[in-house]
Image (cartoon, rainbow, N blue to C red):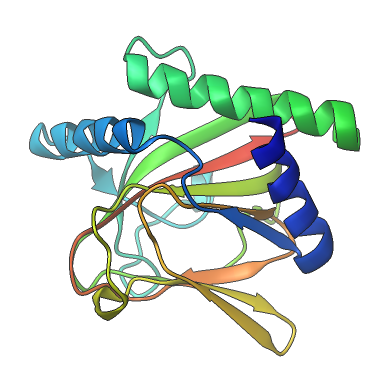
Length: 197
């Protein structure tokens, strides 16, 4: 797994983002996707918003996804496995890049057909705790015609990444503005942030 971690780090150092396909096994992708679907069926997905604490508000002109936060002390085997993997990545970053990371948060994200998230940064204006963003896609048999791409903005350059199941994207939370384009079918992922608390 260290080889995959290093690939993501090198990608970020050279291009300001790292991405790799098949970051986790297809079986784990399926299991995590099923967990998201169960949460959706049970009504545990809530409308996402913008801002935090007193500035939090729902704004369908900015984002239309639904989310369900994942607890760090998971009892579900697949979610625990994913969190162990992300903590291993944090330890790798701390030992190789001296990042001083000591926290992590993540949530499932459900984008219904036509849903989007306009251009934004992941770091809050009054809270610099989020240092790195990491997105894992859970979609099955995603095709180019399905839309829903992640678009990252690097000055005048734009990078477009399709949300293929098992693909992961890694970038600095305060540097890369990005958006999620409308999808033509349901789009599923796990968004996470590595933090200094």
